[in-house]
Structures are given as C-alpha cells and as structure tokens.
Amino acid sequence: MTSHLEEKYQASWQERQTFAENMQPIIGQLFRNKGIEISVYGRPLLNASPIDIIKAHKSVALHEESKLRLRESFPFVEALSKMTLAPARIDIGKLAYAYLYQGQANDLSIEQYLEKELTPVTRENIDQESQDVVLYGFGRIGRLLARLLIEQTGPNAKLNLRAIVIRPAKGDDDLEKRASLLRRDSVHGAFNGSITVDKENNVIKANGAFIKVIYASSPSEVDYTAHGIDNALVVDNTGIWSDEEGLGQHLQSKGVAKVLLTAPAKGDIKNIVYGVNHDMILAEDKIVSAASCTTNAITPVLKAINDEFGIKNGHVETVHSYTNDQNLIDNYHKAPRRGRSAPLNMVISTTGAAKAVSKALPELKGLLTGNAIRVPTPNVSMAIMNLNLKKATDKEALNDYLRNISLNSELQNQVDYTASTEIVSTDLVGSRYAGVVDSQATIVDADRAVLYVWYDNEFGYSCQVVRVMLEMAGITVPTLPAN
Image (cartoon, rainbow, N blue to C red; front, side, top):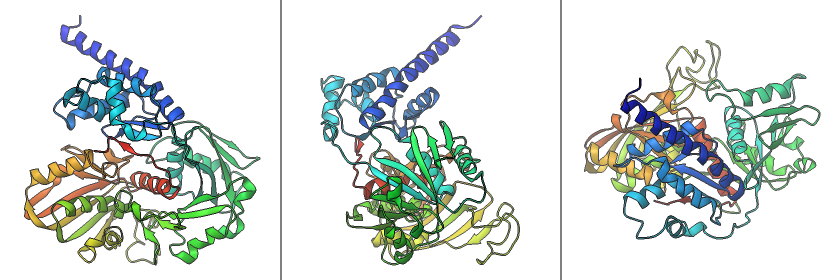
C-alpha cells in the first residue's frame, strides 16, 4: 500500500510529464513555423525529450531562490505560439521566473508582459535570405556541424546544408560508410533522427535535409552551380590550409561566396571567437577563421575577468583530449612526443591558444603564456588559468561574478557555470557552450586566481562555429531576454 508521500510524489511527477509532453509539439511548431528556439536558463528545448524538458526546469533551482514548475512556464510557451515574432532564441525560463517571482508582472497579463519583453522581435517575420552551406571535409568537426545544421532543418532554417565535399571514393560502399559515421558516434551517441542514402544521386537524406556528396581532390575540381548551389559559405574543416593562398582556392570554385576555417588562421585572416569579437566580421570579408576550440573556451572567460578585475599576466595550461593527429600506438610522427600512443600516455605538447587570445582580445597581447598536455580521453578538455589580477577579490565574489556572466550577459551563450562537486569530463559531452567554469575548483588569494574551465572541444566548439556562420551570412537571431 502506497503512503501519502508516495502518492503525492507520483502525482507531481505525472503532472510534470504531462506538461512536458504537451509542451513538446508547441516548441517544435514555434521553431518550424516562426524560427523561435526555446530554452530554459540556457538549456535548449528544441528536439528535447519530455525528461530533458523536466530536467531543464529542475536546473532553475541551481540559479534562483525558488524552482520553476512546468505548470508555471507552460502558459508562457502557449502565449508565444499565438504571437507574431521574428526568429529569435527565447529563454522562457528567465521570462517566466522574472514575471512570477521577481515582481516584473506590474499588473500585466502574460501576453502583455511578453509583448513588452520581446519588443525587438514582436513584428512581422523579416525575410532574411537563407544561406547555402557546404562542408569541405567530413571529419570530427564536419560531422558535428552536419548534426547541428540538420537539427535546424525546416521552413525557417537560415543555414541550409546543401553539400559535403570529401576525397574521391575508396570503394563502392563509401557513401554508406560516410552516412554510418554520421548516424553513429562513439562519443556523441546516435544521430537523433533518420538517415538514408540515395546512392544513385550521391545524396544523404537526414531529417528533411537533402545533402549532396561531392567527391573531389581539391577545390578547383568543384563547380557548385552544377548542383544548384550558389553564393555558398564553404566551411573548411580539413585542416589542410590555414592561409589566404590556400583557403582562397575555394573562392575560385563556381558558386562560392565566402570561406570559414575551423582552425586558427595565419596572416591577416581574422580569427573570430563568437561573443568576443564577432563584430569584427564585415560584409566584405571573404575568408574568416573560427580560431581553435581552446581559444574559444578561454577567451570569453578571460574577457569577463579582465573587464571586471583586470589581468596583469597569467599562464594557461590545457589538459586536452587526444586528437586524430596522434598515433594509436607508438609510430613515427613529425611532431615531438606525438608519435607515442595517445590512449596510453599523457603527452606534453604545445598550444598557440594563449597567444591566439590576443587576436580576439588585443588588450591581453603579450600577457599570457600557455602549454598543453594531451591525455587519454577521446573528448572534453580543461583549461587551467593561473591569473594575476589588477584588483584583489575572493573566491565567492569571483564565482558570483562568473555565475552572473553565464546567466545575464552578452556572453551567456559562451560561458556556462557549474557548482557541482561531482562533475567529471564525461558529464560535459554535448555541452553547447564554449567553456564551463568549474566554480568548486576556483582558487583565489587576493590578486591571484586559478580558474578551471571545462570545454567539449568538439561539440561546444562546433556550436561556436555555427554562430560565426550566421554572422558571416548576415543573419541575426537575437537571444532574449538579453540579460
């Protein structure tokens, strides 16, 4: 016989499940019909399961004094579905919490409140032209970019994945093998959806995306207009070229307008860390770099720290998962130490990430040193930042500041924050943030601070790349509320 407490808990859980299940189709329709992406305190709900929606609401209690119930947020989602809105990312958790618990209702109905708070997008949908995208290369980053772009497929999709370019086929089953690598991933799990192969037309079909697979040995071999692709943004994730001469080859191909490199660039090419210096991207820029995963992880946090406390100097040590340029077993490698078995060794290596910070944040030029240790994990890395500050502080004040940055700043999509005492690297697989501040590990002694920042060096970085792609395409998708 169940107790009163058991019955109460079970009834509460059933209520939450019901609201989450009812919320799911509305969230999907908001995106498909209006280009609205719903989140709860930064946790995206698009394509989320009912359990994920429940967990996102539960996480509000980590940041606020009171929890947010699904029955409280549901009316806000319903109200949004009836509004005329331009594409945006809307944090329904923050809006609902402010209305219900922070005295921002001011005798307004939910509908009136949303009209006021969402003023920047409460207008007829502005028809921004969608951007054709080509992925040149289909390795770790290429396939994750494909997943992210396919996730956004729909009538309001602003980035349309039209094609991928890979080396000439090595066998009759090449296309199937490429599709299989997209379908299954040892780190990031199964693809969320359906993937089929049209071998006759060299096409991968995934969740409504119709992706042409083009085989070529170099950019000069490709005419994208022959495949109905024009004015395309080519995302080069091969790592073969990093300078203007090499990447400029893409611009010689018919149908290409711009090129984005998913690695640090050489020469005068702009290295962009979205959230920090993306405003440097001009309409006339033809080649842009999204910098490195580590530079993306550390620069937003460094900017936040420097803005508030000032940085005299510091050292960044990267504990980085092994990558594909290392050997599985001991074998020749042109780089020092990288010839030793990656799954068996910690390998001291070099990183240019600390110096590269200055390309996005010039005020820190010459103030940071850096090194790296490759470790036997397949994904998720950590940056340990040992900083000498211009202004003394303490652990609580520094953590509170970074927590607020993660929730209520222009860097809220780049910087995440955790207060967990149990979190480990695998818990961060799939994080959509550039970096996650581990507040429990923070050390502060007056003007000296040591910060630990986790980052999914594959998925989190890919999310940053997509943000740069939107900026290059001139597509604006604001995040609301802004702070």
